Image (tube, rainbow, N blue to C red; front, side, top):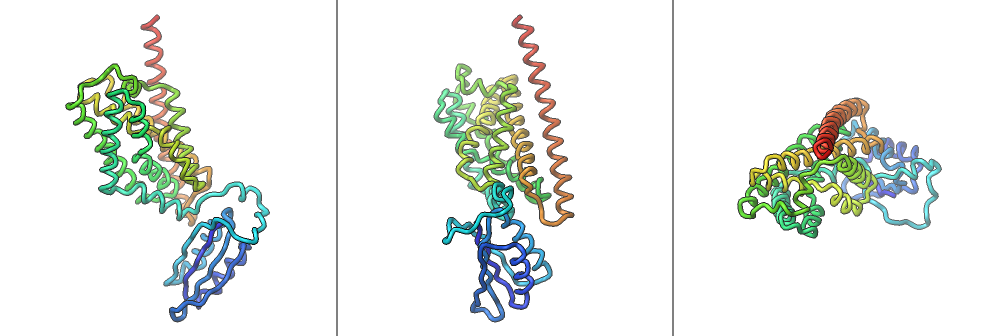
Length: 332
């Protein structure tokens, strides 16, 4: 459930009350406030209809001034409210669009802390890869700072929020740039260990990696859309963006061009798979803008980015199949 507080002028109160009554809330009440000519309306609403009610409130207050809507999760309330009659809405619970945007904006912001986190996690990944340390590599996966801007890019495209798409793209590019630079510098301090299974496995691009990255991106978007942040820890390990990035930098520094190209291809493949699957999940979860014009722009952005990602994946899959056939012929 959600608690929705609306702070507004008294003259605008009736328009909001009509919208609230139309959605049959669990409970609602009006409080007087100290400010002159102001009111506070508090609503307790089922999760399944909170987004519809929030959109209706914004529509009702579209031409009004000096109002604010605050949304808070409700852990429990007594007596227990009746469940929604619409079983589909009850089963398809999700965070509000505004809550999701707030979380994603925070994770996709290009800050000094983000760049430092990328650098530190790359150090952990590079040392773990070169020393064949599984624990260190998993630790770098869990940190996973690059997952935030990728989900921000997908959500921005799904909502037609081009400012978020631009911000996420810049953050992702900066994060990958820092990772490559740090790994490249580490390669001059550590002799490349080609006997390391963890390192050499990042120079292999296989079809099962495509399926893994697609599933990880879908799971990340779905866990965010359902407000299940704890699931993201497992997704971070599955997505594994920093290890191939660190391997790419190490191979470049050691002038191992073939291995470097494969690691770079694996990194690009993971990013494209994560973007594509997240776009699909956000679309299926019906996460879209409020206005129909914004929805049309969002649909265009979604299909454009999904088409580009799918085309890139098709090219990569073709290359993987050709390389596998070439290796099989040479062995035979």
